[in-house]
Amino acid sequence: MSSTNLDSAMRMRTVRTVSELRAALEPARRDGLTIGLVPTMGALHEGHLSLIRTAHEQCDRVVVSLFVNPVQFNERTDLERYPRRERRDTDLAAAAGADLLFAPSVEEVYPRGFATAVEVFGLTERLEGEARGAEHFRGVATVVTKLLCMAMPDVAYFGQKDAQQVVVIRRLAEDLNLPVRIAALPTVREHDGLAMSSRNSLLSPAERARALALPAALRAAGDLAATGERSSGALLAAARGELSRSGVEAEYVALVNPDTLEPLESLAGEALLAIAARVGAVRLIDNTVLSAQPTGEDPQQPKREAITLCSV
Image (tube, rainbow, N blue to C red; front, side, top):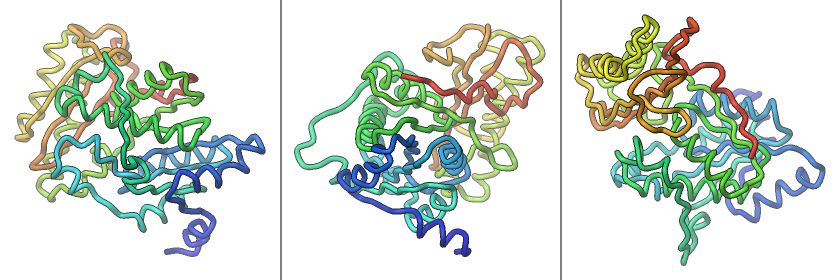
């Protein structure tokens, strides 16, 4: 570790219980300082670090949660294979500007007798909900609600790569009158366009090359939309064609309303193009926002308007 990272790690404190977290944040709350929360499941990459840096710029205190949430995994093997690198994550979070790392145990988050779940209806049945089952978003909504109540941040930061998750979390925060702003930042990508994901480390070199079919599929649909094509069928066919050429198995390729996630028959205004696919045993997701009004931006990337702060 460099001397700079060592100094950062020494300044950042790691806490593992809710009582420790609240005690550590009490002075900041008492002094009226703003608190930002970056929820993660660890295996931090540049996408996570961009959220932490933004939180550091916008808030007086930054909490990064590190918790692999077992109840949102519908496949036990996926849970078991999920990368866990706490020491490395601690160093990276500290260097990016985190003040507190909250790394609770499963027993701390779900103590004996825990019997409550949070479920958002209407937004969770499609896409990831259909592919992974109702328990996935029930698990996501429950743990995010718990983390927001544990840390009580002013702002919580999420990445646009998990676009459906952002929509669901905004709805639960609004419906439950949680006093938090939900900030969504654009997807961060590797130099070759692959969306950064903790699961990328599980890909073999050959699978890593095939995974480039996902951003290529987004680009193909975006290029077609830029020519004036508005038919959902044609845009989806272009995306599926790129996946098929690389032998990538798609779970879904969908063009939906970015706010309601309802399927669209044609592109009018803005639309979310979302993909989930398996490359070998690794499941990857990606998305982009297509527009009926071409802006000349890279169709792999969400529009800058996707950087939004939603007050609730």
